[in-house]
Image (tube, rainbow, N blue to C red; front, side, top):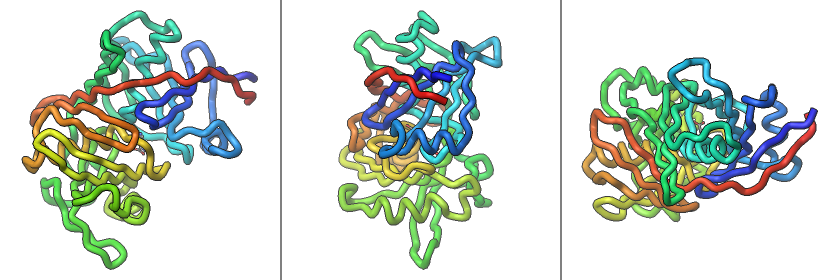
Amino acid sequence: MLVHFSKMHGLGNDFVVIDNVTQNIFLSREQIATLADRHRGIGFDQLLMVEAPYDPDVDFHYRIFNADGSEVEQCGNGARCFGRFVRMKGLTNKQEITVSTKKGTIRIRLEVDGQVNVDMGKPVLEPSEIPFRANKQEITYIVRAQEQTFLIGALSMGNPHCVLLVDDVESAPVNEVGGLLTRYERFSEGANVGFLQVTGEKTAKLRVYERGVGETQACGTGACAAAVWGMLQEKLASPATITLPGGNLEITWQPGETLWMRGPAEHVFDGQFVL
Ligand SMILES: N[C@@H](CCC[C@H](N)C(=O)O)C(=O)O
């Protein structure tokens, strides 16, 4: 069987996108991990599946798989590529698309300048919903892992995030500490680990060690989570420009409101593989 796909990226966070509205594809965890291999497969950080809606109030359903084959709840850079993909493939002619995901519904707005703005929903701060095992309703915690102590922010954008404030993001131990905290026991589902350096009232730099992948060029939900954490601590103001290794995202949020994430989405090539 031939599977048609598009290779896309959002700030270098790269994807294989499969139209499962007109195709009927099932991939096992192992098959996804093999396809994600950058030496023996196509190579990608996440695989995105565009599906027909289950709910009549939305336009599409969106499934997301990490490079290790695990299915996850949300992907911000992927959401922008999803919006560009469904328009490019003629699956919709709408400028604003409503999409259900494993955790919640997002709204994707295709703007005239080519940027894509996504209503990512409300950040979740309750520990029981992150899912972070803590009993206090706070978002900054002191945690100990492998005899080291960290001050972390823990919150969810549908998927779980941990954020650490650093003085210099370039020299931050992203692989070492990211690799440790992504599996930290109090995150029952694991976590994406962001290293945030605030550089101005509305600017910050960020590197993210993604759960199920490792460090990526950019993490959209990571930028949302880090911006929210910075704003709640009054270290950052909205709208904030978050600079990731792959480029900039603009995050607009006020407490109690839904969060908007704005940035680019690029198509690289179309291809086919045999299943
Ligand atoms: N790259 C993504 C996040 C993808 C999922 C993440 N690795 C997880 O396991 O939650 C983004 O742009 O948000």
